[in-house]
Amino acid sequence: MNVRGVADVRPRRPAALPRRVFTLEHANRTLPLIRRIVGDIVDQHKRVSALEARCDTSDPSLHGAKLDSLRRQYLGEIDKLRKLADELTEIGVELKDWRRGLVDFPTVRDGLDAYFCWRLGEERVEFWHDLEAGFPGRLPIDEPSNP
Image (cartoon, rainbow, N blue to C red):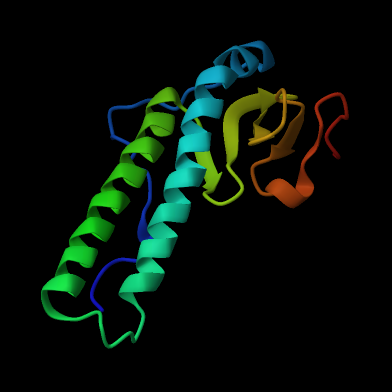
């Protein structure tokens, strides 16, 4: 099959869009909007993944016009997913995991670039990590960085 997989969908960051730096207060104030968008992304990702699996099936009843229709639907759903991810990019938040609803808010901590880290289902932004640590290296915000 010749359609792009879910993994190939990346938010687009317009060249003219500067990198936003969030304070903890600003990240938490933005969270209601982020929560809605990320919830939509997780739901949309499930739809896209299900359609992708159906398109990749060897089901003999899925051929010709029926398969073409399913592929068009899949591509339309991919476009919706990309637009949702672009909304986060426009806000300045980086989507890290489509399935878990994980996002990073760029920030500066102890004079160095870092991220506040939030996952769908968490009430507030309460974790951070340095640029290289990612989710496994996240720490409570009140915990200092390791020199």
